[in-house]
Length: 114
Image (cartoon, rainbow, N blue to C red):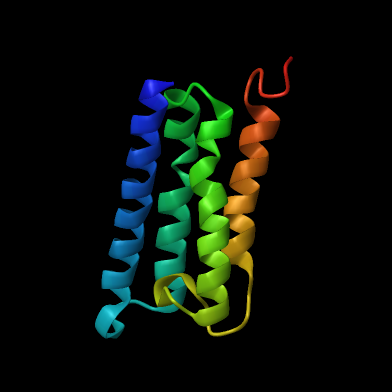
């Protein structure tokens, strides 16, 4: 459990770094919204591997994606992180961390007391 708290912090730092890369890539029109969204999706999506390997408690492992559901709802609603958003109103940024949570809980050995 103590290591899980470290990995919790690392998770937030990692996602923030991926968002920063996407935001910087989009600044000044260097990359399209499509490219930066894909960079963010791939970057954040690959975090499932360290999550499965490093965390020991699935309930702590889902804290970051749960919090990003809330953050992404705010960003989608108020366009806070342009690098994640498309021109159209697409809630994909909300579904992405939701799927992360569901997959973590569904496939984590022992998450359901098995």
